[in-house]
Image (cartoon, rainbow, N blue to C red; front, side, top):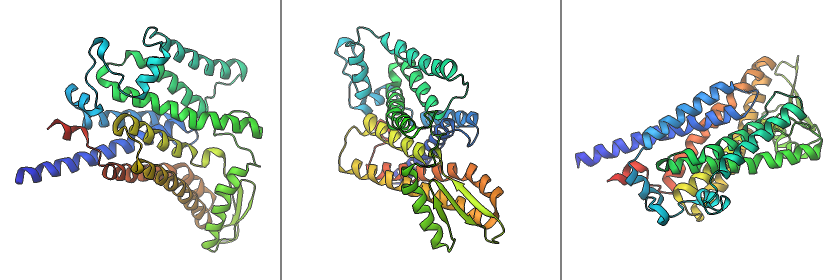
Length: 340
């Protein structure tokens, strides 16, 4: 009985450490992709630290890894294609006959992004969408060179960046073309965007009025006086400030994890998916409300500082709560428990 109690405490401790690792990892990805927030280098460092921690706290033997995916270990021509990423690669490379198609494709994608920015736009600045596409290209280039024992991690990364490309890069590029922005990334904005106006600006104005703050909106801009009425506070909400990337990172990470680990799409998964989208929207509204309230009470300088820092803290807090709920609600058996 004492041993079981001790094992239970160890399990809870390791679950907590895994959640911390996930928070650091995805916060790092969020920071590395988004521009004009925290340092991109800091984001890369956080992502590496979180990834190393996650690997260390969930590492398993090769035998355990095979049980984890539900498929046997690779055995020559009899090996099964483990998950959707491997199936897609298997088909794309003509049933594995042309494996070099993967690195060639990645190089073409990366080269296309760099050529477009350097020689067509004459711009060395890489926007958020550029970073996503380059990371997708890197995952494609390296796919064949990652050892099979890391197939789960390898496929998770490939699916994650592919979904991020589909969910964010394609729609925002279309958005840029439709509304006349030039860069095709979240740093651009258009003052007449109806999406931002109705889904974020209008709700934020209503929330501020609950605090007895007389806020008015025009397009994507909110204006209100500070508490002393000696300064006008003006907030312009760009597409990059909508929380689109944070929500998209959640959707991509959640879907990738379900595909490589849970491997079912049942009512529980659908419920968590809907819950995640709703709560990420609410979390972003909370972020913008806090920023506006700081501006109202403490002025524009404090507002700018809060805008640069509070978003990532809320994102990390929300990710921790959601993934903790996901592990418990889906009753996912974590790797070290499968060894016994």
